[in-house]
Amino acid sequence: MRAWIPTIAVVTCYLALAPGCKDERSRPGPDAAKVTSPRAAPVRVVVSTEPRHRPRLTLVPGLPGTPRPQPQRVGSLHLTAERCHLEGATFLSTRQDPALRAVEVLGRHLYAIDHRGAVLRFSVAPTPRCRLRLDKSWGTAGVHRSRLDLERLTVDGHGTLIASSYLGSLVVREGRVAYPCRARHQGHVALHPTGGWGLAGYSGSDVHRLVFGPTSCTGAVWHLTALRDDARRRGPFRLVSALGFQGDTILVGGSLALRVQGWHPHVAVAFDEQGRRRFQLGALTGSGPERLGWIRSIGACGSQRICVVDGTLRRLTLWDTKGRFLGAASMPDLLGVTTPWLTNLAVASPDRVYLAAGPGGTQAGMSEGTIFRVGGLAGSTP
Image 1: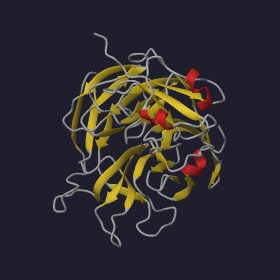
Image 2 (image 1 turned 135 degrees about the horizontal axis):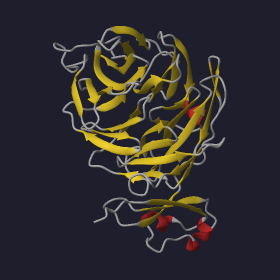
Image 3 (image 1 turned 90 degrees about the horizontal axis):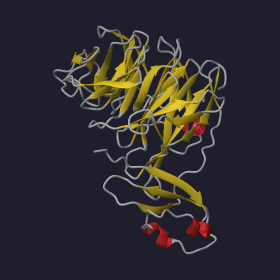
Image 4 (image 1 turned 30 degrees about the horizontal axis):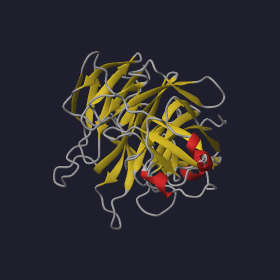
């Protein structure tokens, strides 16, 4: 029996023309009864068939308008952002969760995880402007769903993509799902660029080392363990929020067990594979740009640079491979989105990265996910 996949369609119309802007399969939702003026402002009409909900037509005046990105100067770099045009999919969520959880680029495809934990794949058009078209050869009509509530994406340098959750992960090779990883030690995976292995963890858990073979995977604890136990803890963290790599250097972002002036600072620490500490990103005190909030994503963005996505302070901070601070960009200004939630950075080239952002919610209780392409990391614009 073919599984039913919920769909979302978005139409733009004026209330004065609402009778001609209907879906015969839907019935007016409760918001429609509040509209009385024929000269009301334009709205977006969302026809949503969420799981376990009957289709209904809902007028949503609170969805955001067109983002207006603004160039940002970060040290010697001139960063620019462009909203990508999506064909075949719109990311909307009526939950508290963001409409997009993660994005990643592998070859000429961009993968994305939506609020349901499903993985979608887009073809990246070879055009000057950013255009992404849903690849319907992937999964079922462009969407792959599993029993795992997937949340993170990562790639290596040899064509492997891992989609991971707290309890398990999927291994994708040559554009197909190779197998589900059922190792005992799981978490949000970050792959080493040379392939074959990676690290995994989540807030408050041990950090695990996973090895991905041709048909199965194995896992074991790494050097950061017992983070919630002051007596048994190994390593400097009380919780880990992000993992990444810069070449062979392992990057771990999180909250320190050390308390400084009444709080636990958020920093990133660089380790070698044996768990030996090399350097640290982020200030322990103060309120300047070197101080970090909740680290949403960390990793290489160029051969000589580390990028940190700060979800609390909504900044993109840049560091060199010795841990020296290079500068920071305001993400609301760069993307043109007020109070954005942010995903990981998906590195497509030394100069170009992708990420998803959008508001945490709207007056109608709905959020929309938008994918951006950011350029200028190699000193030129997209």
